[in-house]
Image (cartoon, rainbow, N blue to C red; front, side, top):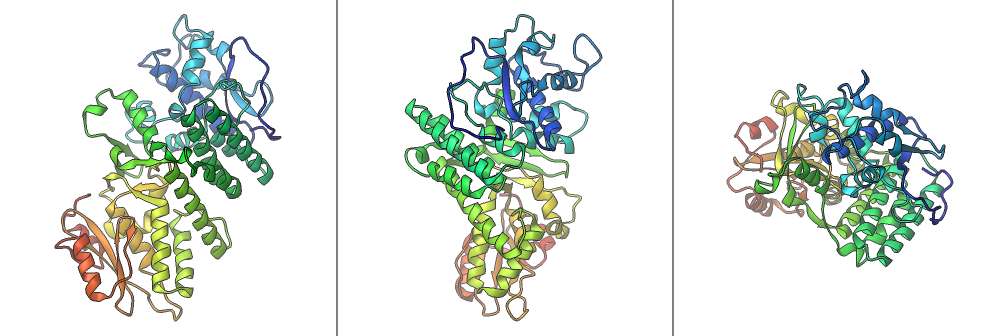
Length: 475
């Protein structure tokens, strides 16, 4: 990151690009950033046939005993002392790691390619250790780090621009620097629009807003994302799992002939099957969701007096307990509904939860489980109908009213095809929770009718294991 942000300016001309830049080298995560950048460059080159297809990062590279990973990481430096890690393409060309005859221009085209290719993928990481199933803890760190790296030619647009997520995640910056990053992104997006590149402008604003939001620069993030809610930028279509789709399609040419389902496993033993067709959206809707997330996080932080990670269930439980003591049942319902909508989405296919974890204990493990669940481009954790009833059980069951009495009687129902929850307060009024959809407050007869509409012939119990034992299938 440029620690003294300035207006975008035309750079000095170059005959040929000699380096691909990524993120700021400042901050405690520089080693992890270097590791992720090297791995990502290796992946992109291998996909384009510049590296042997059977090669793996931790195997010995040609011409010595050092591994591909070690050799690649040695090429990632801050050679200009400007705070950005760079991969020297001329040295890479001459390293013996790539196919004979590869040119700097070829490397630049591969490594500064489509922004959607900018992250590591589960498939690639798993392929590096075929004897170890799933993603390791280090894989997860590499994956997270790569989300903040966009390999790019700094002169690709003839402008000195910021790369949103990469720059902002690299190190803590002041609010003034964050505001400058937002302004530069907005100005660059305007230039892109003038050149007819609406798609590039949308991607830049979305990624900049995401990076600012995830680093808690909410004022700058709002300025960036609000621009994305305005036509014509808002009208662009986007699939919220497109990065994963693109990565899988490159690896598996037969993907489009099958069910369009992406499978992601984690080291907790949970497997998430993401249905691509369930995530069609627009950039305007994506921006609106992130704006709503920031507003709710601010409410949570004001109540708790601390920085909040919204899917940290202990913090969420503390927040809703405090909220419940000073608000009505209907207000609690509305705030909880906003929470589910803002931070969670059904994966479209389902989640196979680790069968070794007792069902009734899963709500107590949600913080750890959710931390490893995949997210979509709007920042929502992907779960399934069972995941939602685990949330409902953990967050709604213990709530108390102003008198210290239990606020809701929470039950869960299944019918062999789906599961939902239902919460009823002391007056007999309640609501149905179906995945992330929270229904209106209803009296007892209307509530029973609504439950039957959501779950025909459903059977309800206060015990999660009772519902699970009915053989409920993932919807």
